[in-house]
Length: 323
Image (cartoon, rainbow, N blue to C red; front, side, top):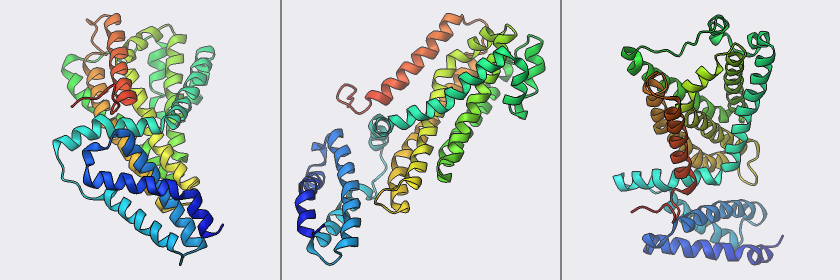
Protein backbone atom coordinates (compact mmCIF):
# COMPACT_ATOMS: atom_id res chain seq x y z
CA UNK A 1 0.00 0.00 0.00
CA UNK A 2 1.27 3.48 -0.90
CA UNK A 3 1.41 6.32 1.65
CA UNK A 4 -1.36 8.30 -0.10
CA UNK A 5 -3.67 5.30 -0.09
CA UNK A 6 -2.88 4.65 3.56
CA UNK A 7 -3.63 8.29 4.38
CA UNK A 8 -6.95 8.22 2.54
CA UNK A 9 -7.99 5.01 4.28
CA UNK A 10 -7.14 6.01 7.85
CA UNK A 11 -7.21 9.84 7.90
CA UNK A 12 -10.75 10.10 9.30
CA UNK A 13 -9.81 8.18 12.46
CA UNK A 14 -6.63 10.19 12.91
CA UNK A 15 -8.54 13.47 12.66
CA UNK A 16 -11.10 12.20 15.17
CA UNK A 17 -8.29 11.27 17.56
CA UNK A 18 -6.71 14.71 17.06
CA UNK A 19 -10.04 16.41 17.88
CA UNK A 20 -10.49 14.33 21.02
CA UNK A 21 -6.94 15.14 22.14
CA UNK A 22 -7.62 18.85 21.70
CA UNK A 23 -10.83 18.60 23.70
CA UNK A 24 -9.14 16.56 26.42
CA UNK A 25 -6.43 19.19 26.72
CA UNK A 26 -8.61 22.32 26.58
CA UNK A 27 -11.93 21.10 28.02
CA UNK A 28 -11.33 17.78 29.82
CA UNK A 29 -14.70 17.87 31.59
CA UNK A 30 -16.48 17.91 28.23
CA UNK A 31 -15.39 14.32 27.54
CA UNK A 32 -18.01 11.68 28.25
CA UNK A 33 -17.20 8.08 29.23
CA UNK A 34 -17.96 7.15 25.60
CA UNK A 35 -15.47 9.76 24.39
CA UNK A 36 -12.82 8.41 26.77
CA UNK A 37 -13.39 4.88 25.50
CA UNK A 38 -13.23 6.09 21.92
CA UNK A 39 -10.01 7.97 22.67
CA UNK A 40 -8.41 4.76 23.94
CA UNK A 41 -9.62 2.75 20.93
CA UNK A 42 -8.34 5.35 18.47
CA UNK A 43 -4.98 5.53 20.27
CA UNK A 44 -4.55 1.76 20.00
CA UNK A 45 -5.51 1.88 16.32
CA UNK A 46 -3.09 4.75 15.68
CA UNK A 47 -0.33 2.78 17.42
CA UNK A 48 -0.94 -0.10 15.00
CA UNK A 49 -0.98 2.33 12.06
CA UNK A 50 2.34 3.79 13.20
CA UNK A 51 3.88 0.34 13.33
CA UNK A 52 2.79 -0.31 9.73
CA UNK A 53 3.99 3.11 8.57
CA UNK A 54 7.42 2.64 10.16
CA UNK A 55 7.74 -0.69 8.42
CA UNK A 56 6.50 0.25 4.95
CA UNK A 57 7.42 3.94 4.51
CA UNK A 58 9.52 5.13 7.48
CA UNK A 59 10.64 8.40 5.81
CA UNK A 60 7.24 9.59 4.62
CA UNK A 61 5.40 12.58 6.12
CA UNK A 62 2.53 10.25 7.10
CA UNK A 63 4.87 8.40 9.44
CA UNK A 64 6.07 11.65 10.96
CA UNK A 65 2.50 12.83 11.52
CA UNK A 66 1.51 9.53 13.11
CA UNK A 67 4.55 9.58 15.35
CA UNK A 68 3.52 13.00 16.68
CA UNK A 69 -0.12 11.95 17.06
CA UNK A 70 0.72 8.79 18.98
CA UNK A 71 3.22 10.72 21.11
CA UNK A 72 0.55 13.27 22.07
CA UNK A 73 -1.91 10.50 22.85
CA UNK A 74 0.59 8.63 24.98
CA UNK A 75 1.51 11.77 26.92
CA UNK A 76 -2.15 12.46 27.66
CA UNK A 77 -3.15 8.91 28.55
CA UNK A 78 -0.07 8.08 30.62
CA UNK A 79 0.73 11.39 32.23
CA UNK A 80 1.18 11.34 35.98
CA UNK A 81 -1.93 12.42 37.81
CA UNK A 82 -2.23 13.82 41.27
CA UNK A 83 -3.84 11.22 43.49
CA UNK A 84 -7.13 12.49 44.85
CA UNK A 85 -10.25 11.00 46.35
CA UNK A 86 -12.17 12.23 43.32
CA UNK A 87 -9.85 10.29 41.04
CA UNK A 88 -10.08 7.17 43.22
CA UNK A 89 -13.87 7.46 43.26
CA UNK A 90 -13.96 7.81 39.45
CA UNK A 91 -11.62 4.84 39.10
CA UNK A 92 -13.97 2.55 40.98
CA UNK A 93 -17.20 4.15 39.78
CA UNK A 94 -16.42 4.22 36.06
CA UNK A 95 -12.99 2.91 35.03
CA UNK A 96 -13.28 -0.58 36.48
CA UNK A 97 -16.85 -1.22 35.23
CA UNK A 98 -15.86 0.02 31.77
CA UNK A 99 -12.90 -2.36 31.68
CA UNK A 100 -15.23 -5.20 32.70
CA UNK A 101 -17.77 -4.44 29.97
CA UNK A 102 -15.09 -4.15 27.30
CA UNK A 103 -13.84 -7.63 28.19
CA UNK A 104 -17.12 -9.30 29.11
CA UNK A 105 -16.58 -12.09 26.58
CA UNK A 106 -13.40 -13.15 28.35
CA UNK A 107 -15.33 -13.06 31.62
CA UNK A 108 -17.86 -15.42 30.05
CA UNK A 109 -15.06 -17.76 28.92
CA UNK A 110 -13.56 -17.70 32.43
CA UNK A 111 -16.92 -18.58 33.97
CA UNK A 112 -17.33 -21.49 31.54
CA UNK A 113 -13.85 -22.74 32.46
CA UNK A 114 -14.87 -22.55 36.13
CA UNK A 115 -18.43 -23.89 36.06
CA UNK A 116 -18.08 -26.37 33.19
CA UNK A 117 -15.67 -28.62 35.13
CA UNK A 118 -17.69 -27.94 38.30
CA UNK A 119 -20.86 -29.28 36.70
CA UNK A 120 -19.07 -32.32 35.31
CA UNK A 121 -17.31 -33.09 38.59
CA UNK A 122 -20.54 -32.59 40.53
CA UNK A 123 -22.49 -35.07 38.40
CA UNK A 124 -19.73 -37.67 38.43
CA UNK A 125 -19.16 -37.39 42.19
CA UNK A 126 -22.87 -37.67 42.86
CA UNK A 127 -23.23 -40.78 40.70
CA UNK A 128 -20.04 -42.47 41.89
CA UNK A 129 -18.45 -40.99 45.04
CA UNK A 130 -15.28 -43.00 44.46
CA UNK A 131 -14.54 -40.71 41.53
CA UNK A 132 -14.24 -37.83 43.98
CA UNK A 133 -10.97 -39.32 45.20
CA UNK A 134 -9.54 -38.78 41.72
CA UNK A 135 -11.16 -35.41 41.11
CA UNK A 136 -10.39 -33.73 44.42
CA UNK A 137 -6.85 -32.48 45.13
CA UNK A 138 -4.87 -33.96 48.05
CA UNK A 139 -5.38 -30.76 50.06
CA UNK A 140 -9.10 -31.54 50.51
CA UNK A 141 -8.98 -35.33 50.53
CA UNK A 142 -9.22 -35.20 54.31
CA UNK A 143 -12.80 -33.92 54.01
CA UNK A 144 -14.03 -37.09 52.34
CA UNK A 145 -14.33 -39.21 55.56
CA UNK A 146 -16.27 -36.36 57.21
CA UNK A 147 -18.64 -36.16 54.26
CA UNK A 148 -19.09 -39.94 54.18
CA UNK A 149 -20.03 -39.80 57.86
CA UNK A 150 -22.67 -37.18 57.08
CA UNK A 151 -20.81 -34.31 58.76
CA UNK A 152 -19.99 -30.88 57.41
CA UNK A 153 -16.90 -28.91 58.36
CA UNK A 154 -18.67 -25.56 58.12
CA UNK A 155 -19.67 -25.14 61.77
CA UNK A 156 -17.46 -22.36 63.11
CA UNK A 157 -17.30 -21.22 66.71
CA UNK A 158 -18.31 -17.60 67.23
CA UNK A 159 -14.93 -16.75 68.78
CA UNK A 160 -13.13 -18.09 65.70
CA UNK A 161 -15.21 -16.26 63.06
CA UNK A 162 -13.07 -13.07 62.82
CA UNK A 163 -9.92 -15.14 62.28
CA UNK A 164 -11.74 -17.44 59.86
CA UNK A 165 -13.00 -14.44 57.87
CA UNK A 166 -9.47 -13.04 57.61
CA UNK A 167 -8.03 -16.38 56.49
CA UNK A 168 -10.76 -16.86 53.88
CA UNK A 169 -10.24 -13.38 52.44
CA UNK A 170 -6.48 -13.87 52.26
CA UNK A 171 -6.83 -17.25 50.56
CA UNK A 172 -9.34 -15.99 48.00
CA UNK A 173 -7.18 -12.98 47.17
CA UNK A 174 -4.25 -15.36 46.60
CA UNK A 175 -6.34 -17.56 44.28
CA UNK A 176 -7.55 -14.50 42.35
CA UNK A 177 -4.00 -13.15 42.07
CA UNK A 178 -2.78 -16.50 40.73
CA UNK A 179 -5.59 -16.53 38.16
CA UNK A 180 -4.58 -13.02 37.10
CA UNK A 181 -0.82 -13.53 37.11
CA UNK A 182 -1.21 -16.87 35.34
CA UNK A 183 -1.96 -14.90 32.18
CA UNK A 184 1.76 -14.20 31.87
CA UNK A 185 2.18 -17.86 30.93
CA UNK A 186 0.11 -17.32 27.79
CA UNK A 187 -3.06 -17.85 29.84
CA UNK A 188 -2.26 -21.52 30.45
CA UNK A 189 -1.89 -21.23 34.22
CA UNK A 190 -5.02 -19.07 34.42
CA UNK A 191 -6.95 -21.80 32.63
CA UNK A 192 -5.52 -24.39 35.03
CA UNK A 193 -6.54 -22.36 38.10
CA UNK A 194 -10.10 -21.97 36.83
CA UNK A 195 -10.50 -25.64 35.93
CA UNK A 196 -8.83 -26.79 39.17
CA UNK A 197 -11.15 -24.70 41.33
CA UNK A 198 -14.15 -25.78 39.29
CA UNK A 199 -13.34 -29.47 39.77
CA UNK A 200 -12.83 -28.94 43.49
CA UNK A 201 -16.09 -27.03 43.89
CA UNK A 202 -18.16 -29.48 41.86
CA UNK A 203 -16.53 -32.55 43.36
CA UNK A 204 -17.25 -31.49 46.94
CA UNK A 205 -20.79 -30.37 46.17
CA UNK A 206 -21.63 -33.58 44.28
CA UNK A 207 -20.19 -35.70 47.07
CA UNK A 208 -22.19 -33.91 49.77
CA UNK A 209 -25.42 -34.34 47.83
CA UNK A 210 -24.66 -38.04 47.39
CA UNK A 211 -24.45 -38.44 51.17
CA UNK A 212 -27.51 -36.30 51.85
CA UNK A 213 -25.84 -33.18 53.27
CA UNK A 214 -25.66 -31.12 50.09
CA UNK A 215 -28.36 -28.69 51.15
CA UNK A 216 -26.45 -27.96 54.32
CA UNK A 217 -23.40 -27.03 52.29
CA UNK A 218 -25.57 -25.01 49.89
CA UNK A 219 -26.97 -23.06 52.83
CA UNK A 220 -23.43 -22.26 53.93
CA UNK A 221 -22.23 -21.22 50.46
CA UNK A 222 -25.21 -19.29 49.10
CA UNK A 223 -24.72 -16.05 51.06
CA UNK A 224 -21.16 -15.40 49.88
CA UNK A 225 -20.86 -17.67 46.86
CA UNK A 226 -22.31 -15.38 44.19
CA UNK A 227 -19.72 -12.66 44.81
CA UNK A 228 -16.86 -15.03 45.59
CA UNK A 229 -17.21 -17.20 42.50
CA UNK A 230 -17.84 -14.19 40.26
CA UNK A 231 -14.61 -12.61 41.48
CA UNK A 232 -12.66 -15.72 40.54
CA UNK A 233 -14.18 -15.38 37.07
CA UNK A 234 -13.22 -11.68 36.94
CA UNK A 235 -9.63 -12.45 37.94
CA UNK A 236 -9.60 -15.24 35.37
CA UNK A 237 -10.76 -12.81 32.69
CA UNK A 238 -7.90 -10.48 33.64
CA UNK A 239 -5.43 -13.34 33.26
CA UNK A 240 -6.92 -14.36 29.90
CA UNK A 241 -6.52 -10.76 28.70
CA UNK A 242 -2.78 -10.95 29.36
CA UNK A 243 -2.58 -14.37 27.75
CA UNK A 244 -4.41 -13.19 24.63
CA UNK A 245 -2.05 -10.23 24.26
CA UNK A 246 0.94 -12.58 24.35
CA UNK A 247 -0.52 -15.18 21.99
CA UNK A 248 -2.24 -12.80 19.56
CA UNK A 249 -0.51 -9.41 19.66
CA UNK A 250 -1.76 -8.50 16.19
CA UNK A 251 0.29 -5.83 14.48
CA UNK A 252 1.85 -4.72 17.76
CA UNK A 253 4.93 -6.13 19.41
CA UNK A 254 4.15 -8.51 22.26
CA UNK A 255 5.49 -5.98 24.71
CA UNK A 256 3.21 -3.21 23.43
CA UNK A 257 0.21 -5.53 23.25
CA UNK A 258 0.86 -6.69 26.80
CA UNK A 259 1.14 -3.15 28.12
CA UNK A 260 -2.16 -2.17 26.50
CA UNK A 261 -3.95 -5.28 27.80
CA UNK A 262 -2.45 -4.85 31.27
CA UNK A 263 -4.19 -1.50 31.75
CA UNK A 264 -7.64 -3.09 31.82
CA UNK A 265 -6.44 -6.36 33.35
CA UNK A 266 -5.02 -4.56 36.38
CA UNK A 267 -8.31 -2.73 36.88
CA UNK A 268 -10.17 -6.04 37.03
CA UNK A 269 -7.58 -7.52 39.38
CA UNK A 270 -7.87 -4.51 41.70
CA UNK A 271 -11.66 -4.85 41.77
CA UNK A 272 -11.26 -8.33 43.22
CA UNK A 273 -9.82 -7.05 46.50
CA UNK A 274 -12.80 -5.08 47.90
CA UNK A 275 -15.26 -7.64 46.55
CA UNK A 276 -13.43 -10.50 48.26
CA UNK A 277 -13.29 -8.55 51.51
CA UNK A 278 -17.09 -8.29 51.38
CA UNK A 279 -17.39 -12.00 50.53
CA UNK A 280 -14.98 -12.92 53.33
CA UNK A 281 -16.95 -10.95 55.91
CA UNK A 282 -20.17 -12.64 54.82
CA UNK A 283 -18.53 -16.06 54.85
CA UNK A 284 -17.09 -15.48 58.29
CA UNK A 285 -20.12 -14.01 60.04
CA UNK A 286 -23.33 -14.73 58.10
CA UNK A 287 -22.78 -18.03 56.28
CA UNK A 288 -21.99 -20.14 59.41
CA UNK A 289 -24.62 -18.45 61.62
CA UNK A 290 -27.25 -21.07 62.41
CA UNK A 291 -29.66 -18.42 63.73
CA UNK A 292 -29.96 -16.71 60.34
CA UNK A 293 -32.71 -18.35 58.23
CA UNK A 294 -31.85 -19.96 54.90
CA UNK A 295 -34.15 -17.49 53.11
CA UNK A 296 -32.18 -14.56 54.54
CA UNK A 297 -28.90 -16.09 53.39
CA UNK A 298 -30.34 -16.52 49.89
CA UNK A 299 -31.43 -12.88 49.96
CA UNK A 300 -27.94 -11.80 51.04
CA UNK A 301 -26.32 -13.83 48.26
CA UNK A 302 -28.66 -12.63 45.53
CA UNK A 303 -28.68 -9.06 46.86
CA UNK A 304 -24.91 -8.67 46.99
CA UNK A 305 -24.61 -10.34 43.59
CA UNK A 306 -27.19 -7.97 42.10
CA UNK A 307 -25.37 -4.94 43.53
CA UNK A 308 -22.05 -6.17 42.18
CA UNK A 309 -23.34 -6.79 38.64
CA UNK A 310 -25.27 -3.51 38.63
CA UNK A 311 -22.02 -1.74 39.39
CA UNK A 312 -20.05 -3.68 36.77
CA UNK A 313 -22.66 -3.43 34.00
CA UNK A 314 -23.89 0.12 34.59
CA UNK A 315 -21.06 1.89 36.43
CA UNK A 316 -19.93 5.02 34.60
CA UNK A 317 -22.97 5.11 32.30
CA UNK A 318 -25.60 7.85 32.34
CA UNK A 319 -28.02 5.43 34.00
CA UNK A 320 -25.63 5.02 36.92
CA UNK A 321 -24.22 8.55 36.91
CA UNK A 322 -23.47 9.89 40.36
CA UNK A 323 -21.73 13.19 41.02
